[in-house]
Amino acid sequence: DMQLTQSPSFLSASVGDRVSISCRASHGISSYLAWYKQEPGKAPKLLIYAASTLQSGVPSRFSGSGSGTEFTLTISSLQPEDFATYYCQHLNSYPPGFGQGTRLEIK
Amino acid sequence: QVQLVQSGAEVKKPGASVKVSCKASGYTFTSYDINWVRQATGQGLEWVGWINPNRNKAGNAQKFQGRVTMTRNTSISTAYMELSSLSSDDTAVYYCARGRQHDGDYDYDYNGMDVWGQGTAVTVSS
Image (tube, rainbow over all chains, first blue to last red):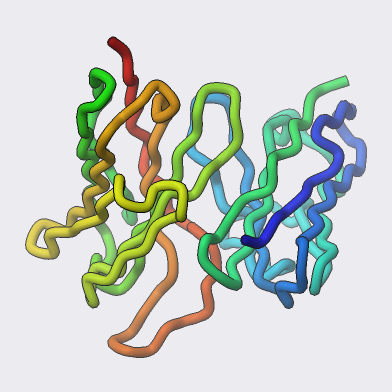
């Protein structure tokens, strides 16, 4: 099965910071990658699909890039509501597995 | 509005089965896959399986092979996930999520899971 490795696993940052989260696939997946945000006690929320396409309603401070095996989620200016856990997911084959998650906390 | 509403929390004994429902509204139920994803407390997301409600075709992660069954009732726009031979390792919140869109035999690009249910807590305890 495809493996996704996110880094870092934990990230501490301040409101207004620019942060990036990496997701590396064990083999090439073209642009078949999605990013999700999950707040404690809530269901995940789709942020980005096709590696770089912003889901409707998601703020433009979120962006995604990459293709093949290396992908990045960037938040340009952190807002208080952005402190959560972020997951990547590959969509090119079954099972559509997730990365292990990156927990973003307030410094 | 488009939404998925899941059944309530369950407490089961080891060895029992659990069946979770996911009722769709606000869109054409048979036009999108339904996926099932679970999350143990403090852990990450784990994909369990999927069903294409139109074709009644389903699949699941290898680790659940023989234990999980995905079904649907199109007349009430509801998908079901049944997990048998429960153990404490199955204690988790189970989510349903809308997945790939289809139009008859045409499959759109898989653009992620864009609508999620609220989650159903399943506790397995003796």
